[in-house]
Amino acid sequence: MINPQWLRTFATLAELGSFTRTADRLDLTQAAVSQHVQQLERRLGPLLIRRPRHAEVTPAGRALLDYCRELDQAERRLHGRLADDDATHGEISLISPGSVGLALYPVLLALQAEHRGLRVRHRFAPDREVLEAVLDNRYELGLTSVRPDDPRLAAAPFSEEPLELVVPASVRVEGWCDLQRLGFIDHPNGPSMANRLLRQAFPGNPGVRSLPVHGFSNQISLILEPVARGFGFTVIPRYARQAFARPEAIAVVETTSPVVDTLWLIHRSEWPLSACAQLAMRRMRDASRPEPTVAKTKPSRSKAVACKTVRRPR
Image 1 (tube, helix red, strand yellow):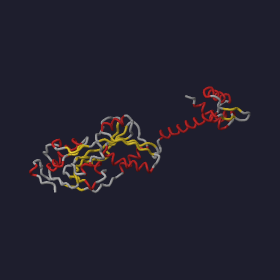
Image 2: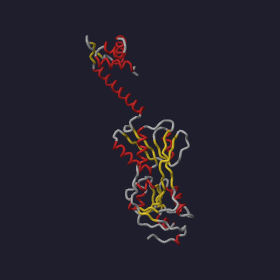
Image 3: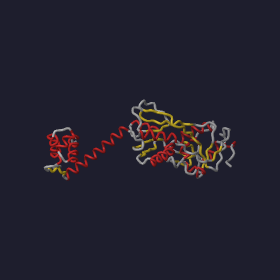
Image 4: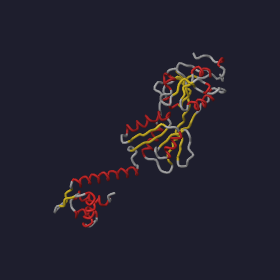
């Protein structure tokens, strides 16, 4: 690595064109200025043509001046990043479950549109990967449905995310047998989510694994597409349902005992958040997504395990 003092001496000499004035500005002797230039020229070749009244920079010297400017700019960027006093320039990095991510990603893009100095990096991931990514400093902010117990992570409640039973808009669910006729649209978290919600909505039911499976998707934004086409029902977080592009094609079955997960906003606790992250947090908390118009239907109050006691969908 080139000695930074030699570079400062050379850049000042190129600016002033005089060994004497360079020595005065840098509080050095003329001999020290000459020595610094000689050290550089031993490594890089001729940098100056020494004239009686001024020094002229060679092409190699101009290349070195470009290098000095690049170093100066990099140093200013480093100081700016460490000072972190500008919330409108820098990177916003968020890792979250796909459902809430569908709601938040447009919010962050709107923030980037307001401040073009921002860059948004967002990844959808399950809870375990969220925790690991924030701990490893690969993402500054994370959202998870599991409150971490690691002291290296700070966690605060961010929002609540209810699970919803979603069916085709034309279907009325009166009991368990209506779900049997519909069939289940599965997804990676489908069985666990469905069992948690259906246990409350239809007490005594034989479980989601007793239902026929009429489809599967691991893309959070596509899980409701087969439901909208009438191929079956599913259980999905509300944020994912709200982001669906055709709300008129689906219906939410209201339940008397909702199942609600708390989402936790996490970050490393050992150092302060960047100004960009703080701005993003405020915008995400303040953002309110309007509830899309969606049909709602209520299940029968009976346990409705026996199919013969249930009316067919109207």
